[in-house]
Image 1 (cartoon, rainbow, N blue to C red):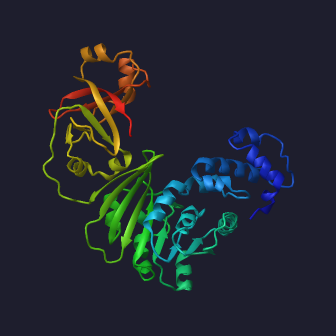
Image 2 (cartoon, one colour):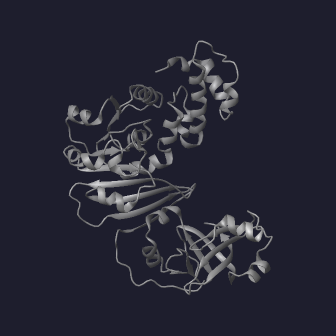
Image 3 (cartoon, rainbow, N blue to C red):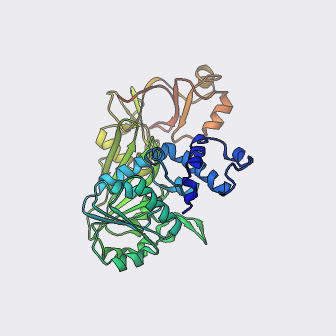
Length: 395
């Protein structure tokens, strides 16, 4: 670990330059010639990334950061806090420790944590940072996590894994069998050390593909932060045989929106409707889940079209997504577009519509922004329609 970076003058310099353009700084003369200039610049760049994503690390003195990409790939504190809420027990081993954000939050509810990391330098940095953060119940181990499991030879309440999604041969990968470690291949071995496993995967992993690779999936958590899906969590319990639950979570500034249903659950026949008074657009976690019919059934909503994934009602509902009140509703045609939207300024969304937002804006000279919202979609009679709306803010 490069302890010279903890020099108070260097730390002051790093803090003074948070948010500065790194390319511009790189052209300047190194004010600390005894310390590698790129190492200092990396600290500035990584700590800048941590300001919003890892506020506890950012606020603590004498934290050392690894490469910027390690900070980019680590969990945010928001998602780590949610993960910790899923875990109960006395012990947990993290087979892919990384920068250690998840383990920091696990340590608040679990007494014994083992942090495994192949990269010795990163493991040393994590150990140093835990000391600065006053964490004493996490022990760090360097080396192959399978060997660490064997050497420790104990039962754990939980195993946590965040497989690396980069392959030396295939580049960026998404199937679990192509990640490191290969979880499907090692699953039976893991069960000899714990009956509960939590796996974090990239949001691009297809749910059906993941279920085909894994056994005993109890719950899939789809985690979004401010309506952007960040990660999938696969909660596995040895010998679990029931239908998996799908739980969508959107972590917003002041509240958490959740929706859950059983995978492959049967729904009553789908009800379609012309646009009524209100329009509902599911959040990104629900969109990822594909539980569109289950959503309609639970909230007793009607859809505009089987494939539009927009819902409607005459009564205003508390809904996990965006809610709009329709001000105007018309068929998509040249006369109507010229009359209502040409040369206007409005926010546009397309759902089950043959043209892109960019093409619509160009064709009808519609500027981006403004207070209004416009949906281009398809109705139950397969007509192309336009809905001009005002957004209803969450309470």
